[in-house]
Structures are given as C-alpha cells and as structure tokens.
Image 1 (cartoon, one colour):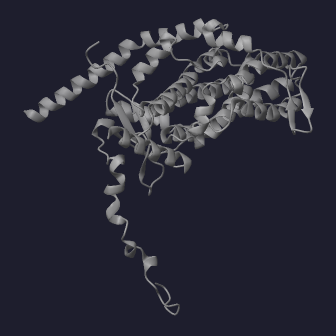
Image 2 (cartoon, rainbow over the protein chains, first blue to last red):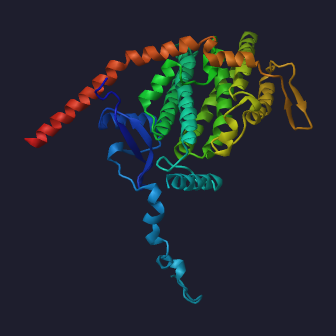
Image 3 (cartoon, rainbow over the protein chains, first blue to last red):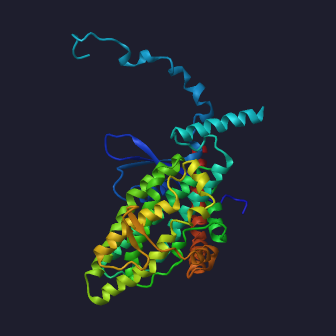
Length: 96
Length: 319
C-alpha cells in the first residue's frame, strides 16, 4: 500500500475549433500522457467539442496565490491611461 | 492575532458569497463549507456512477440497435458526469481513492433512486423521463452554486442531461402509442417510479438539517419542497399527454397556489432505503466493489507500464 496506487491527475485543455485558444475544461486521472489524451477525448469531447487536446500533469501547474491577489494585481489598478477610453478625441476626428 | 486574521478571512468569504462572486479552489473557505461541498459533490458523483447499473442491465436487451446505441451513449454520459464531479470534489482536497473507498464501505451515500430495480424495458423509459427529469430540476439551479468547479461541472452535465430525458420520454411515447400490453407496461413502470422519483428531492424542508446553511452559502438555491412542487407541476401535464394516470389519489389542481396539491411521500420507505434496506442496495454496492476489485490489476499494470516507460526515457536521456 505504500507505493503510489492512484493514477496522477492531469489538467485538460481543449481547442474547440481551428483559430481559437485551447481552454481549460477540467481534469482527470491517467497513468501517462497518452492515456490522459485518450481519456480526455472520451470524457470531454463526446459531442465534437474539440479538434485538439492538451494535457498537463497537474503537479506541473504553478499558480498565483489568491490570498495575495489584491497586492499582486495592484500595479494595474491606477493606470486607466492604458485604456483608449482615457483619451478625449474631438468629434470631428473619424476612424480613431 | 490569529483569530483576527481568521475573522477577516471569513468576512472576505461572506462578502464574496453576498456579492455572487464564485469561490475557487485555493480561496479561503470555512471548514464546514468545504465539508458540506465534499459530501454533496461526492454523493452526486457516486449517484452518477451507481446510476449506470440499473440502466446498464438493459443494454444487451434493448429492443433495437437504435435503442441500444442510445442507451449505451446515455450510460457513457453518466460515467462522464461522475468523472466531472469527482474532479470537482478533488479540488477541495479529497482524493479519488478516498471517495471510492467511502462509497464502497457505505460511509458515503448516493441517490436512493438507484436502489430500485428495472423490471421491464419501460423502466428505462421511465428512468429517462422521470429520474433524469428530476435530476435536471435539481441540477439546473446548481449551475449558479457558489463553488466555481461544481458550477462549471454542472454546466456540462446539464447540457448533456436533456438528451437523457428526451430519449426516455420517446420510449414512453412509443409504448403508450403501441399495443394495449405496451401501454400497460408503460403505466406499470410509471407507477413504480413516480414516488421514488419524488423522494429524489430529499426529505421535507423541516426535516432537512443541511438545507438552511446550504441556502445561506448559496450552495443550494431552492429548498427540497420547492423543487418537488415544481417537478410535479411540470410532469403532470406530460403524463396526461401520454395518457398515463399519476398513481396519486390526492393529486388535484389548486387554482389558488397555481400548482398541484399532491399526496405525501412514504417517508418511512424513504428512510428505510437511505439506511440501506431498499430492494437493490446490497446488489448495487457489491456490483460496484466487484468491478473495482476485478479492475485493480488493469490500473496497477497501466501505472507500472507508465513508470517503466518514464524510467527508460530517463535512462536514454542520461546516456
């Protein structure tokens, strides 16, 4: 019982059609990458939801810390001038 | 100091709940919220998995190739739903092995509806129409449940579930438009499944200890009795369309409440099945355990194969 018995967890990303990004859809257990892709096909694309699948072992995903989200994303808070609506454009000016 | 931090975390959590901001896996949450979710989501997952058994029984006996393909597809969907839900529960820190062990030991529950037998082909129709209908009624509000991964799993489940209900209704319609013996089969299946389906919404509100807290945390959006009432109001006209008689002598339209009055569920039977004494409880769990144990060598072999391949790959890179 001491050895690992549960198959590792994988995160699944699916491109729903050519031209779109792969998007996270969920996770599943599989012994290796090949099996993860096959299982992802059976679990997440039974109704033609995808044309391409990525799988990443969950332990390889590194994430920002939600408890520090406020401070972490703070630098963008006071920079409204990064948005085009910050600037006034005279009504006579077209196509800008 | 610690209690002050704890308090502000709890306040931040409550504020998110109040503002309809979803809670995500790594966010701070009260221990009881986590526990409630693990219990509810794993119970939901187990129901999908055990739910494959009564229907799987009929795959080899489906009356046509078309019906067989449809039923196979539905049962495969149930497996998928179980997997989405197990994954959602795992984001709360429980493991798949633990959840499965709890199901097999009887510690974890699943929907009692699957402890009733499927005696004829009409039962497959009745399950799709009634049981999946009730499941949809329960699940649609869960799309707005406060825990993100659970809500997202429900979006996928609900999308797929409506095919399940329609194929069941179509089976019932075919039987009801068929020979008198077929119509009789449909009515008998309806009689068998009507009351157990009403039990799927859980105990009466005043006897449902978890409802109030779950509503406050926006895990649940409607009470058991509210959903049960909606279900009856939705199903009675459908039964009438099929020409089936609802097996409830107290069923009566109530103009004042704009809904049906209906008889009381046999709560003694309900608790009895929950406690493990339904017609198929033992059979369902022993079938599950058998499948799990007989599949153990496949799981172990796949893992050993993957490890060996990874090791060989590493050696090749090293040399």
